[in-house]
Image 1: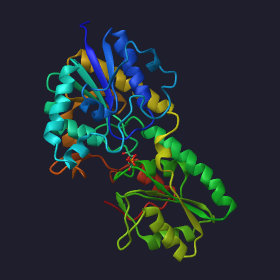
Image 2 (image 1 turned 180 degrees about the horizontal axis):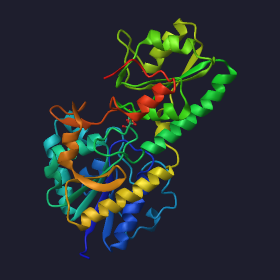
Image 3 (image 1 turned 90 degrees about the vertical axis):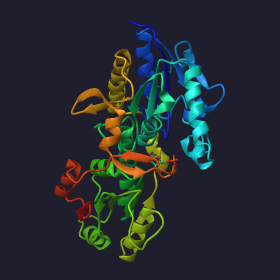
Image 4 (image 1 turned 120 degrees about the vertical axis):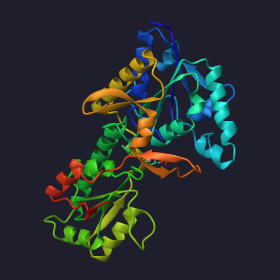
Length: 363
Ligand code: F6P
């Protein structure tokens, strides 16, 4: 087998499962007798001169027993780090892109494994010249499950588990005080996390941006409930006409106005923490194996996916084409390819059948 030098990096927000996938790729590289380096702090590390790297082939401390824990051992950069957003805001996008390209060339890599979310992958598609001269293999990770063309992403299942455990515990607190908890979830513009955790915990209502809801009907639903406590799962991207502020607060105010005792709860980044679930670890193994095969087969500009039980790669072009395009919130002229909860999502039907209020009209 031909010798190769592989680079690996994590970009964007972290999620549980990153360390498992890094570990699996490193293990696989060793089996192939390929050298592998980690690029630290995402694009910030690549922008540094020289690039911030760690030798993962030799460095024993990176052979971690804690690969199942959250966060990224390679780090994802800090607020204000040099990333595409920061470069765009300071008018330095062109020189930033050139620097990344030069760093990758200086590192003499044959392939780069980029573990990223829909923002990072859309940028890799848009500014593809950065990766000229090497094989770019992307692995989709995100707790939001908003990446098109793959049934699963690293980190989603762990986030659902974390949020479900959190909500389960609140349910006991809710019961002893005869009150409702409005839990605001992460997930950006995609309702998958709220929907899955809401179904898992048996929430009484789940509000997501993909389904229009009516506050009066939500109130009616809660009042008609046979219990005087429960969970209302609210995705962070929902909005109510004429109201501003945090979505959970808006719903809470409406419930209070209808004399429904309630509290709000914000699990925030706890959703990204916690042990990586077995399902995410298996996914990490499948994606690592698929990525290594893609490197061996000299593929480039591809993303690993799981589709109907099959692990394979799709082109970055196909990834980009498949999603709904929205303007990048930070970079003028750049589009991000997004996945959302579709109207025919089986969980929407199951939730409805099981008497969970999910709104009125699927968008
Ligand atoms: O995209 C992952 C995510 O956790 C979203 O669900 C959330 O809206 C956002 O990142 C939070 O970002 P930050 O860590 O920068 O606050």
